[in-house]
Amino acid sequence: MSFPFYLAICAPVTLLPPRGIRIYLAILLPVVSGITLLHIFLLSCFRIALGRGLLYVLFDTGKEEVAEYLGEHLQPSLILIFLLFTAIAAAITVSALRLNWKQEKRSFFLCILLLGPLLVSATRFIVIGEPTAILYRVSSLRIVADFLALISEQDRFYQAAATAPQLPEDIRPVAPGLSNLLGIIAIGESATRSHHGLYGYSRDTTPFQSGRSDLMVFNRVFSAAPLTGVSLKYALTFATLHKPEEYRCTLVSILKKAGIRTVWLSAQGERCSTDSLLFHGADRVLYSPTDTCDDALAEMLPQALAGWERSPVVILLHLNGSHSDYSRRYPKQQHRFTDLPPEPAHLSAEEIESVNHYDNSIAFTDSILKKLIGFLETTERPSFLLYFSDHGEAPARNGRNNIRNPKVTAPIFYEIPFWVWASRQYHTIRPGFAENARGNRDKPMQLDRGGIYALCDIAGIRYRNFPEEANIFSASFRSQPIYFLGTVFSASSIPAEEVKLPVVFSSPPDYIIPRRNTDGTMAHAPRR
Image 1 (cartoon, helix red, strand yellow):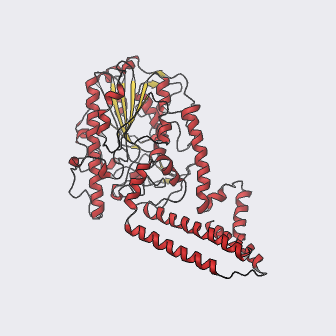
Image 2 (cartoon, helix red, strand yellow):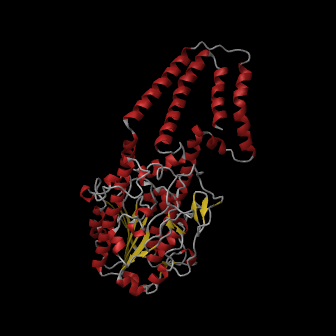
Image 3 (spheres, helix red, strand yellow):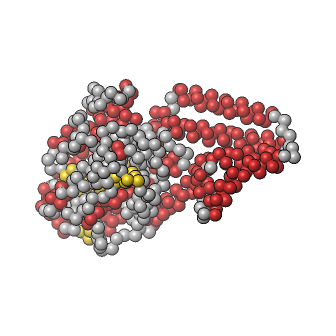
Protein backbone atom coordinates (compact mmCIF):
# COMPACT_ATOMS: atom_id res chain seq x y z
CA MET A 1 0.00 0.00 0.00
CA SER A 2 3.01 2.33 0.20
CA PHE A 3 2.97 2.94 -3.56
CA PRO A 4 -0.72 4.04 -3.60
CA PHE A 5 0.04 6.29 -0.65
CA TYR A 6 2.93 8.01 -2.40
CA LEU A 7 0.73 8.51 -5.47
CA ALA A 8 -1.95 10.04 -3.26
CA ILE A 9 0.33 12.58 -1.61
CA CYS A 10 1.23 13.83 -5.10
CA ALA A 11 -2.44 14.54 -5.87
CA PRO A 12 -2.65 18.01 -4.23
CA VAL A 13 0.01 19.28 -6.64
CA THR A 14 -2.55 18.96 -9.47
CA LEU A 15 -5.12 21.21 -7.77
CA LEU A 16 -3.27 23.79 -5.67
CA PRO A 17 -2.41 27.26 -7.00
CA PRO A 18 1.27 27.90 -7.80
CA ARG A 19 2.01 29.45 -4.39
CA GLY A 20 0.24 26.59 -2.61
CA ILE A 21 2.23 24.07 -4.63
CA ARG A 22 5.51 25.65 -3.58
CA ILE A 23 4.53 25.66 0.08
CA TYR A 24 3.30 22.05 -0.15
CA LEU A 25 6.47 20.83 -1.83
CA ALA A 26 8.68 22.78 0.58
CA ILE A 27 7.13 20.71 3.37
CA LEU A 28 6.55 17.40 1.58
CA LEU A 29 9.89 16.79 -0.10
CA PRO A 30 12.11 17.26 3.00
CA VAL A 31 9.76 15.06 5.06
CA VAL A 32 9.68 12.26 2.47
CA SER A 33 13.45 12.52 2.00
CA GLY A 34 14.07 12.35 5.74
CA ILE A 35 11.82 9.31 6.20
CA THR A 36 13.45 7.58 3.24
CA LEU A 37 16.92 8.26 4.59
CA LEU A 38 15.93 6.95 8.02
CA HIS A 39 14.54 3.80 6.37
CA ILE A 40 17.81 3.26 4.52
CA PHE A 41 19.87 3.74 7.69
CA LEU A 42 17.77 1.38 9.81
CA LEU A 43 17.59 -1.33 7.18
CA SER A 44 21.26 -1.17 6.18
CA CYS A 45 22.69 -1.09 9.71
CA PHE A 46 20.12 -2.96 11.80
CA ARG A 47 17.74 -4.64 9.33
CA ILE A 48 14.89 -3.11 11.26
CA ALA A 49 11.99 -1.22 9.71
CA LEU A 50 10.56 2.10 10.84
CA GLY A 51 7.92 0.70 13.17
CA ARG A 52 7.27 -1.03 16.46
CA GLY A 53 10.67 -2.69 16.55
CA LEU A 54 12.32 0.72 16.59
CA LEU A 55 9.89 1.92 19.25
CA TYR A 56 10.73 -1.06 21.46
CA VAL A 57 14.39 -0.12 21.22
CA LEU A 58 13.63 3.49 22.16
CA PHE A 59 11.33 2.48 25.04
CA ASP A 60 13.59 -0.24 26.46
CA THR A 61 17.08 1.12 25.87
CA GLY A 62 19.01 3.64 27.95
CA LYS A 63 20.54 6.78 26.44
CA GLU A 64 24.10 5.58 27.01
CA GLU A 65 23.36 2.27 25.30
CA VAL A 66 21.79 3.98 22.27
CA ALA A 67 24.77 6.32 21.94
CA GLU A 68 27.20 3.41 22.24
CA TYR A 69 25.39 1.34 19.64
CA LEU A 70 24.98 4.18 17.15
CA GLY A 71 28.66 4.97 17.53
CA GLU A 72 29.47 1.53 16.14
CA HIS A 73 27.58 2.28 12.92
CA LEU A 74 28.07 5.99 12.27
CA GLN A 75 31.20 5.47 10.23
CA PRO A 76 32.67 8.21 7.95
CA SER A 77 31.37 6.45 4.82
CA LEU A 78 27.82 6.47 6.18
CA ILE A 79 28.09 10.15 7.08
CA LEU A 80 29.29 10.96 3.54
CA ILE A 81 26.34 9.05 2.07
CA PHE A 82 24.01 10.99 4.36
CA LEU A 83 25.46 14.33 3.24
CA LEU A 84 25.25 13.32 -0.43
CA PHE A 85 21.66 12.19 -0.08
CA THR A 86 20.78 15.44 1.72
CA ALA A 87 22.38 17.51 -1.04
CA ILE A 88 20.44 15.63 -3.74
CA ALA A 89 17.17 16.02 -1.83
CA ALA A 90 17.82 19.74 -1.36
CA ALA A 91 18.59 20.18 -5.08
CA ILE A 92 15.36 18.41 -6.07
CA THR A 93 13.36 20.55 -3.64
CA VAL A 94 14.86 23.82 -4.93
CA SER A 95 14.27 22.76 -8.56
CA ALA A 96 10.66 21.87 -7.83
CA LEU A 97 10.04 25.23 -6.20
CA ARG A 98 11.40 27.08 -9.25
CA LEU A 99 9.12 25.31 -11.73
CA ASN A 100 6.29 27.29 -13.31
CA TRP A 101 3.29 25.27 -12.21
CA LYS A 102 0.14 25.73 -14.31
CA GLN A 103 -3.24 24.32 -13.45
CA GLU A 104 -5.12 22.75 -16.37
CA LYS A 105 -8.65 21.40 -16.83
CA ARG A 106 -7.45 17.84 -16.75
CA SER A 107 -5.80 18.38 -13.37
CA PHE A 108 -8.95 17.27 -11.51
CA PHE A 109 -9.08 13.94 -13.34
CA LEU A 110 -5.35 13.43 -12.75
CA CYS A 111 -5.94 14.05 -9.06
CA ILE A 112 -8.66 11.38 -8.99
CA LEU A 113 -6.36 8.91 -10.74
CA LEU A 114 -3.62 9.53 -8.22
CA LEU A 115 -5.99 9.15 -5.27
CA GLY A 116 -7.81 6.14 -6.72
CA PRO A 117 -5.51 3.27 -5.64
CA LEU A 118 -5.34 4.58 -2.07
CA LEU A 119 -9.11 5.06 -1.86
CA VAL A 120 -9.76 1.54 -3.14
CA SER A 121 -7.30 0.00 -0.68
CA ALA A 122 -8.59 2.08 2.24
CA THR A 123 -12.20 1.18 1.42
CA ARG A 124 -11.27 -2.51 1.52
CA PHE A 125 -9.84 -2.25 5.04
CA ILE A 126 -12.86 -0.27 6.25
CA VAL A 127 -15.28 -2.84 4.82
CA ILE A 128 -13.51 -5.77 6.52
CA GLY A 129 -13.51 -3.86 9.82
CA GLU A 130 -9.79 -3.09 10.09
CA PRO A 131 -9.47 0.68 9.59
CA THR A 132 -6.25 0.93 11.62
CA ALA A 133 -4.61 -1.41 9.11
CA ILE A 134 -4.63 1.52 6.68
CA LEU A 135 -1.95 3.22 8.75
CA TYR A 136 0.01 0.03 9.30
CA ARG A 137 0.18 -0.84 5.61
CA VAL A 138 1.68 2.55 4.77
CA SER A 139 5.34 2.25 5.74
CA SER A 140 5.74 5.97 6.39
CA LEU A 141 2.68 6.04 8.67
CA ARG A 142 3.21 2.62 10.23
CA ILE A 143 5.10 4.09 13.13
CA VAL A 144 2.01 6.15 14.05
CA ALA A 145 -0.15 3.04 14.33
CA ASP A 146 2.64 1.19 16.13
CA PHE A 147 3.11 4.05 18.58
CA LEU A 148 -0.60 4.07 19.47
CA ALA A 149 -0.61 0.28 19.87
CA LEU A 150 2.54 0.34 22.00
CA ILE A 151 1.16 3.05 24.28
CA SER A 152 -1.98 0.97 24.81
CA GLU A 153 0.13 -2.12 25.51
CA GLN A 154 2.36 -0.27 27.97
CA ASP A 155 -0.71 1.03 29.79
CA ARG A 156 -2.06 -2.50 30.25
CA PHE A 157 1.34 -3.69 31.40
CA TYR A 158 1.58 -0.83 33.91
CA GLN A 159 -1.75 -1.89 35.40
CA ALA A 160 -0.58 -5.50 35.75
CA ALA A 161 2.80 -4.55 37.20
CA ALA A 162 1.97 -1.57 39.39
CA THR A 163 -1.60 -0.43 39.88
CA ALA A 164 -3.85 -3.50 39.67
CA PRO A 165 -1.94 -6.81 39.63
CA GLN A 166 -4.11 -9.93 39.42
CA LEU A 167 -2.34 -12.26 41.83
CA PRO A 168 -2.98 -16.01 41.89
CA GLU A 169 -5.11 -17.27 44.76
CA ASP A 170 -3.73 -19.01 47.83
CA ILE A 171 -0.03 -18.18 47.39
CA ARG A 172 1.89 -20.29 49.91
CA PRO A 173 5.37 -21.73 50.62
CA VAL A 174 6.02 -25.24 49.34
CA ALA A 175 8.33 -26.07 52.27
CA PRO A 176 8.29 -24.40 55.72
CA GLY A 177 12.05 -24.89 56.07
CA LEU A 178 12.70 -22.21 53.43
CA SER A 179 11.85 -19.39 55.85
CA ASN A 180 15.51 -18.33 55.68
CA LEU A 181 15.84 -18.81 51.91
CA LEU A 182 18.46 -16.85 49.98
CA GLY A 183 18.08 -17.02 46.21
CA ILE A 184 19.74 -15.29 43.28
CA ILE A 185 18.10 -15.24 39.87
CA ALA A 186 20.93 -14.14 37.58
CA ILE A 187 19.69 -12.88 34.21
CA GLY A 188 22.36 -12.90 31.55
CA GLU A 189 22.42 -10.65 28.52
CA SER A 190 22.72 -11.84 24.90
CA ALA A 191 24.40 -15.10 25.96
CA THR A 192 23.67 -17.67 23.28
CA ARG A 193 23.83 -21.29 24.41
CA SER A 194 26.05 -22.55 21.60
CA HIS A 195 29.02 -20.44 22.77
CA HIS A 196 29.13 -22.06 26.20
CA GLY A 197 31.67 -24.80 26.82
CA LEU A 198 29.11 -26.23 29.25
CA TYR A 199 26.89 -26.99 26.26
CA GLY A 200 29.54 -28.49 24.00
CA TYR A 201 31.24 -25.45 22.47
CA SER A 202 34.78 -26.44 21.49
CA ARG A 203 36.25 -23.44 23.31
CA ASP A 204 36.34 -23.72 27.07
CA THR A 205 34.45 -20.49 27.69
CA THR A 206 32.85 -21.79 30.91
CA PRO A 207 35.54 -23.59 32.95
CA PHE A 208 33.75 -23.00 36.24
CA GLN A 209 30.34 -24.16 35.07
CA SER A 210 31.78 -27.14 33.21
CA GLY A 211 33.70 -28.22 36.31
CA ARG A 212 30.71 -28.23 38.66
CA SER A 213 28.99 -31.60 38.84
CA ASP A 214 26.28 -30.19 41.13
CA LEU A 215 24.67 -27.95 38.51
CA MET A 216 21.25 -28.93 37.19
CA VAL A 217 21.72 -28.08 33.51
CA PHE A 218 18.84 -27.85 31.04
CA ASN A 219 19.78 -28.40 27.42
CA ARG A 220 16.73 -27.19 25.52
CA VAL A 221 15.44 -23.95 27.01
CA PHE A 222 14.55 -21.10 24.65
CA SER A 223 13.82 -17.41 24.98
CA ALA A 224 10.45 -16.16 23.75
CA ALA A 225 11.82 -13.10 21.93
CA PRO A 226 15.19 -11.72 20.74
CA LEU A 227 14.71 -8.37 22.51
CA THR A 228 15.47 -7.90 26.21
CA GLY A 229 12.35 -6.02 27.31
CA VAL A 230 9.99 -8.30 25.40
CA SER A 231 11.75 -11.48 26.49
CA LEU A 232 11.73 -10.58 30.20
CA LYS A 233 8.11 -9.50 29.98
CA TYR A 234 7.27 -13.04 28.87
CA ALA A 235 9.59 -14.74 31.37
CA LEU A 236 8.55 -12.79 34.47
CA THR A 237 4.77 -12.46 33.94
CA PHE A 238 1.99 -14.78 32.77
CA ALA A 239 1.97 -13.39 29.22
CA THR A 240 2.63 -15.92 26.44
CA LEU A 241 3.20 -15.76 22.70
CA HIS A 242 -0.38 -16.96 22.27
CA LYS A 243 -1.78 -14.43 24.77
CA PRO A 244 0.78 -11.60 24.78
CA GLU A 245 -1.28 -9.19 26.90
CA GLU A 246 -2.31 -11.50 29.74
CA TYR A 247 0.37 -10.22 32.11
CA ARG A 248 -1.82 -10.55 35.24
CA CYS A 249 1.08 -9.71 37.57
CA THR A 250 4.87 -9.89 37.87
CA LEU A 251 7.17 -12.32 39.65
CA VAL A 252 8.11 -9.58 42.13
CA SER A 253 4.49 -9.13 43.22
CA ILE A 254 4.14 -12.90 43.74
CA LEU A 255 7.34 -13.07 45.80
CA LYS A 256 6.22 -10.15 47.96
CA LYS A 257 2.80 -11.72 48.52
CA ALA A 258 4.59 -14.88 49.70
CA GLY A 259 6.52 -12.82 52.26
CA ILE A 260 9.85 -12.93 50.44
CA ARG A 261 12.06 -9.84 50.39
CA THR A 262 13.00 -8.80 46.86
CA VAL A 263 16.05 -6.98 45.51
CA TRP A 264 16.57 -5.68 41.98
CA LEU A 265 20.33 -5.46 41.40
CA SER A 266 21.26 -4.35 37.90
CA ALA A 267 24.35 -3.46 35.88
CA GLN A 268 22.26 -1.85 33.15
CA GLY A 269 21.44 1.40 34.89
CA GLU A 270 18.22 3.08 35.86
CA ARG A 271 15.88 3.92 33.01
CA CYS A 272 12.20 4.32 32.27
CA SER A 273 11.55 1.03 30.50
CA THR A 274 10.02 -2.40 30.80
CA ASP A 275 12.65 -3.28 33.41
CA SER A 276 11.41 -0.60 35.79
CA LEU A 277 7.86 -2.00 35.60
CA LEU A 278 8.91 -5.65 35.87
CA PHE A 279 10.65 -4.89 39.15
CA HIS A 280 8.22 -2.25 40.39
CA GLY A 281 7.69 -2.66 44.11
CA ALA A 282 10.94 -4.49 44.85
CA ASP A 283 11.99 -3.88 48.46
CA ARG A 284 15.43 -2.74 47.34
CA VAL A 285 16.62 -1.39 43.98
CA LEU A 286 20.38 -1.09 43.42
CA TYR A 287 22.48 -0.28 40.36
CA SER A 288 26.19 -0.82 39.89
CA PRO A 289 28.26 2.25 38.96
CA THR A 290 28.37 3.12 35.28
CA ASP A 291 31.45 2.13 33.27
CA THR A 292 32.06 -0.89 35.50
CA CYS A 293 31.98 -4.57 34.61
CA ASP A 294 29.64 -7.14 36.10
CA ASP A 295 32.01 -8.04 38.93
CA ALA A 296 30.74 -4.88 40.65
CA LEU A 297 27.40 -6.65 41.16
CA ALA A 298 29.00 -9.47 43.14
CA GLU A 299 30.67 -6.91 45.39
CA MET A 300 27.27 -5.31 46.12
CA LEU A 301 25.67 -8.49 47.52
CA PRO A 302 26.35 -7.63 51.20
CA GLN A 303 24.70 -4.24 50.64
CA ALA A 304 21.73 -5.92 48.98
CA LEU A 305 21.20 -8.23 51.98
CA ALA A 306 21.93 -5.79 54.81
CA GLY A 307 19.50 -6.29 57.72
CA TRP A 308 17.84 -9.36 56.21
CA GLU A 309 20.05 -12.10 57.65
CA ARG A 310 17.02 -14.01 58.96
CA SER A 311 14.47 -13.15 56.27
CA PRO A 312 13.74 -14.98 53.02
CA VAL A 313 15.32 -12.99 50.19
CA VAL A 314 15.38 -13.35 46.40
CA ILE A 315 17.79 -11.16 44.44
CA LEU A 316 17.04 -10.55 40.77
CA LEU A 317 20.44 -9.75 39.33
CA HIS A 318 20.61 -8.34 35.79
CA LEU A 319 24.02 -8.64 34.13
CA ASN A 320 25.45 -6.69 31.22
CA GLY A 321 26.76 -10.09 30.19
CA SER A 322 27.53 -10.24 26.48
CA HIS A 323 25.73 -7.14 25.33
CA SER A 324 27.42 -5.48 22.37
CA ASP A 325 29.96 -3.88 22.28
CA TYR A 326 31.41 -7.17 23.56
CA SER A 327 34.90 -5.74 24.11
CA ARG A 328 33.50 -3.47 26.84
CA ARG A 329 31.95 -6.29 28.87
CA TYR A 330 35.11 -7.64 30.45
CA PRO A 331 38.39 -6.22 31.83
CA LYS A 332 41.30 -6.08 29.40
CA GLN A 333 43.29 -8.49 31.55
CA GLN A 334 40.54 -11.09 30.96
CA HIS A 335 41.14 -11.13 27.19
CA ARG A 336 41.77 -14.89 26.89
CA PHE A 337 40.74 -15.81 23.36
CA THR A 338 42.86 -14.30 20.60
CA ASP A 339 43.29 -17.23 18.20
CA LEU A 340 40.97 -18.38 15.42
CA PRO A 341 37.51 -19.33 16.71
CA PRO A 342 35.81 -22.60 15.73
CA GLU A 343 34.80 -22.77 12.05
CA PRO A 344 36.68 -19.60 10.99
CA ALA A 345 36.56 -20.29 7.24
CA HIS A 346 33.38 -18.29 6.61
CA LEU A 347 34.37 -15.39 8.92
CA SER A 348 36.07 -12.13 7.99
CA ALA A 349 38.86 -10.67 10.11
CA GLU A 350 36.38 -8.28 11.72
CA GLU A 351 34.00 -11.13 12.50
CA ILE A 352 36.80 -13.23 14.01
CA GLU A 353 37.66 -10.35 16.32
CA SER A 354 33.98 -9.99 17.23
CA VAL A 355 33.64 -13.70 18.08
CA ASN A 356 36.78 -13.56 20.22
CA HIS A 357 35.43 -10.59 22.18
CA TYR A 358 32.10 -12.36 22.58
CA ASP A 359 33.69 -15.56 23.87
CA ASN A 360 35.75 -13.52 26.31
CA SER A 361 32.55 -11.93 27.62
CA ILE A 362 31.03 -15.40 28.12
CA ALA A 363 34.15 -16.47 30.02
CA PHE A 364 33.99 -13.36 32.20
CA THR A 365 30.34 -14.06 33.02
CA ASP A 366 31.47 -17.56 34.05
CA SER A 367 33.81 -15.97 36.59
CA ILE A 368 30.96 -13.81 37.95
CA LEU A 369 28.74 -16.85 38.41
CA LYS A 370 31.60 -18.50 40.30
CA LYS A 371 31.67 -15.53 42.69
CA LEU A 372 27.90 -15.68 43.19
CA ILE A 373 27.92 -19.36 44.13
CA GLY A 374 30.97 -18.79 46.32
CA PHE A 375 29.09 -16.07 48.19
CA LEU A 376 26.02 -18.26 48.67
CA GLU A 377 28.14 -21.14 49.98
CA THR A 378 29.51 -18.92 52.74
CA THR A 379 26.06 -18.01 54.10
CA GLU A 380 25.17 -21.51 55.37
CA ARG A 381 21.55 -20.82 54.39
CA PRO A 382 19.21 -22.77 52.12
CA SER A 383 20.12 -21.01 48.90
CA PHE A 384 20.05 -21.28 45.13
CA LEU A 385 21.41 -19.63 42.00
CA LEU A 386 19.34 -19.85 38.84
CA TYR A 387 21.03 -18.56 35.69
CA PHE A 388 19.49 -17.93 32.30
CA SER A 389 19.94 -15.40 29.51
CA ASP A 390 17.29 -13.06 28.18
CA HIS A 391 17.99 -14.16 24.59
CA GLY A 392 20.76 -15.38 22.32
CA GLU A 393 23.03 -13.57 19.91
CA ALA A 394 24.85 -13.86 16.57
CA PRO A 395 28.34 -12.88 17.75
CA ALA A 396 29.91 -12.78 14.28
CA ARG A 397 27.61 -9.83 13.58
CA ASN A 398 28.66 -8.01 16.78
CA GLY A 399 25.08 -7.79 17.93
CA ARG A 400 23.67 -6.49 14.67
CA ASN A 401 20.30 -7.57 13.34
CA ASN A 402 19.25 -9.42 16.44
CA ILE A 403 18.15 -7.90 19.75
CA ARG A 404 17.61 -4.59 17.96
CA ASN A 405 15.41 -6.39 15.47
CA PRO A 406 12.42 -8.26 16.94
CA LYS A 407 11.76 -9.90 13.56
CA VAL A 408 14.62 -12.38 13.53
CA THR A 409 13.71 -16.07 13.51
CA ALA A 410 17.10 -17.85 13.49
CA PRO A 411 17.37 -20.32 16.41
CA ILE A 412 20.67 -18.85 17.63
CA PHE A 413 18.80 -15.78 18.89
CA TYR A 414 16.52 -17.95 21.06
CA GLU A 415 18.90 -20.65 22.35
CA ILE A 416 19.85 -19.76 25.92
CA PRO A 417 21.68 -21.34 28.86
CA PHE A 418 19.49 -22.34 31.80
CA TRP A 419 20.77 -24.06 34.93
CA VAL A 420 20.34 -24.19 38.68
CA TRP A 421 22.67 -24.64 41.63
CA ALA A 422 21.28 -25.26 45.12
CA SER A 423 23.01 -25.51 48.48
CA ARG A 424 23.18 -28.59 50.67
CA GLN A 425 20.66 -27.00 53.04
CA TYR A 426 18.24 -26.41 50.17
CA HIS A 427 18.44 -30.02 49.01
CA THR A 428 17.88 -31.23 52.58
CA ILE A 429 14.63 -29.28 52.77
CA ARG A 430 13.53 -30.34 49.25
CA PRO A 431 15.00 -33.84 48.81
CA GLY A 432 13.24 -34.69 45.54
CA PHE A 433 13.89 -31.41 43.76
CA ALA A 434 17.16 -32.33 42.02
CA GLU A 435 15.91 -35.70 40.80
CA ASN A 436 12.74 -34.20 39.31
CA ALA A 437 14.68 -31.35 37.70
CA ARG A 438 17.37 -33.54 36.14
CA GLY A 439 14.69 -35.77 34.69
CA ASN A 440 13.61 -32.87 32.48
CA ARG A 441 17.04 -31.68 31.35
CA ASP A 442 16.49 -32.67 27.70
CA LYS A 443 12.85 -31.61 27.42
CA PRO A 444 12.21 -28.38 25.47
CA MET A 445 10.83 -25.40 27.38
CA GLN A 446 10.22 -21.80 26.30
CA LEU A 447 10.29 -18.96 28.81
CA ASP A 448 6.88 -17.54 27.94
CA ARG A 449 5.12 -20.78 28.96
CA GLY A 450 7.51 -22.03 31.61
CA GLY A 451 9.65 -19.22 32.97
CA ILE A 452 7.49 -17.82 35.74
CA TYR A 453 6.45 -21.28 36.97
CA ALA A 454 10.07 -22.41 37.27
CA LEU A 455 10.96 -19.21 39.13
CA CYS A 456 8.06 -19.62 41.53
CA ASP A 457 9.05 -23.24 42.20
CA ILE A 458 12.73 -22.54 42.83
CA ALA A 459 11.66 -19.81 45.29
CA GLY A 460 9.50 -22.38 47.09
CA ILE A 461 6.12 -20.95 46.05
CA ARG A 462 2.88 -22.64 45.07
CA TYR A 463 -0.65 -21.32 44.56
CA ARG A 464 -4.07 -22.67 43.71
CA ASN A 465 -4.19 -24.50 40.34
CA PHE A 466 -0.42 -24.26 39.89
CA PRO A 467 0.33 -25.86 36.46
CA GLU A 468 2.88 -28.56 37.29
CA GLU A 469 2.93 -29.63 33.63
CA ALA A 470 4.49 -26.23 32.76
CA ASN A 471 7.07 -26.33 35.57
CA ILE A 472 10.39 -27.73 34.34
CA PHE A 473 11.38 -28.62 37.93
CA SER A 474 8.35 -30.89 38.35
CA ALA A 475 8.08 -34.62 37.63
CA SER A 476 4.84 -33.78 35.79
CA PHE A 477 6.49 -31.39 33.31
CA ARG A 478 5.55 -31.92 29.67
CA SER A 479 7.70 -30.93 26.68
CA GLN A 480 6.65 -27.67 25.05
CA PRO A 481 6.63 -26.70 21.36
CA ILE A 482 9.13 -23.95 20.59
CA TYR A 483 7.94 -20.92 18.63
CA PHE A 484 10.18 -18.54 16.70
CA LEU A 485 7.79 -15.71 15.74
CA GLY A 486 5.26 -17.86 13.93
CA THR A 487 7.28 -21.01 13.25
CA VAL A 488 6.90 -23.98 15.58
CA PHE A 489 9.72 -26.47 16.03
CA SER A 490 8.64 -29.85 17.32
CA ALA A 491 10.23 -31.63 20.25
CA SER A 492 12.07 -33.98 17.91
CA SER A 493 13.97 -33.39 14.67
CA ILE A 494 10.86 -33.38 12.50
CA PRO A 495 10.88 -30.66 9.81
CA ALA A 496 9.43 -27.36 10.98
CA GLU A 497 5.70 -26.87 10.60
CA GLU A 498 4.30 -23.42 9.85
CA VAL A 499 1.60 -22.32 12.28
CA LYS A 500 -0.35 -19.14 12.81
CA LEU A 501 0.48 -17.35 16.03
CA PRO A 502 -0.90 -13.99 17.18
CA VAL A 503 2.49 -12.33 17.02
CA VAL A 504 3.12 -8.72 16.12
CA PHE A 505 5.96 -9.15 13.67
CA SER A 506 6.17 -11.09 10.44
CA SER A 507 9.31 -13.05 9.58
CA PRO A 508 12.05 -11.70 7.28
CA PRO A 509 14.21 -13.94 5.09
CA ASP A 510 15.90 -16.67 7.13
CA TYR A 511 19.45 -16.15 8.30
CA ILE A 512 22.02 -18.75 7.40
CA ILE A 513 23.24 -20.12 10.71
CA PRO A 514 25.42 -23.26 10.46
CA ARG A 515 25.34 -26.24 12.79
CA ARG A 516 21.64 -26.10 13.68
CA ASN A 517 19.02 -28.85 13.61
CA THR A 518 15.51 -28.10 12.36
CA ASP A 519 14.17 -28.19 15.92
CA GLY A 520 16.45 -25.32 16.91
CA THR A 521 18.99 -27.34 18.86
CA MET A 522 22.73 -27.52 18.29
CA ALA A 523 23.96 -30.05 15.78
CA HIS A 524 26.57 -31.25 18.27
CA ALA A 525 25.57 -32.90 21.53
CA PRO A 526 25.84 -30.98 24.82
CA ARG A 527 28.10 -32.31 27.51
CA ARG A 528 25.27 -33.16 29.86
